[in-house]
Image 1 (cartoon, helix red, strand yellow):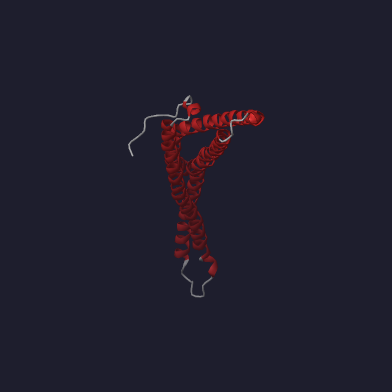
Image 2 (spheres, one colour; image 1 turned 60 degrees about the vertical axis):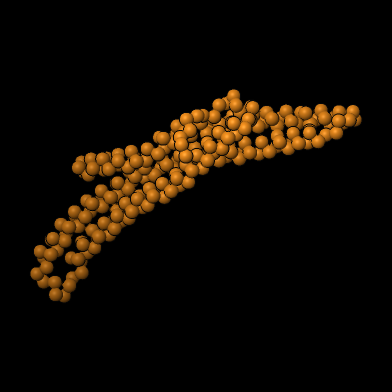
Length: 218
């Protein structure tokens, strides 16, 4: 689909024209696709984070196992002093790697995974909520219009007509308010998604750099 270089004009929210509804459907489709993509991207990032965390746990266990060799007191272990010293040296190196993996996992959680979760829970959830509110308000207004249009034009119905006019006006104001909030959120999402897509990978890169610095200073 070609890029749509438009935004939802707030002044069009009151008119609710076919053109506005058509453009709105494009924004809604885009938001839906973005939600699906964000969920998939988050799963991939959580998998990377999980693998990094597992590396930390695995290297920690390996380091302990290397040290435990000396504690086994093998009956035929005489002359194993060199092996013990070598394994201790390896254990120290693996322990340093464990610190690296653990710190990197911590940085990934803060700089890569968390920002995307925040975007999904805050911005995308807001869009979903406002869409539902807008849909309900639209249905209520259309229902009020239908009731008004079906009212027989008789003098004795003036009181009912007056009440329906008030109901139509109220539901229209309610729909207008809901559409303004919804349109603003959809417009803002087009800008926020650019930051939301880039921030986690910038965080991932930053995590690599900060972890390297952390290792060299500890």
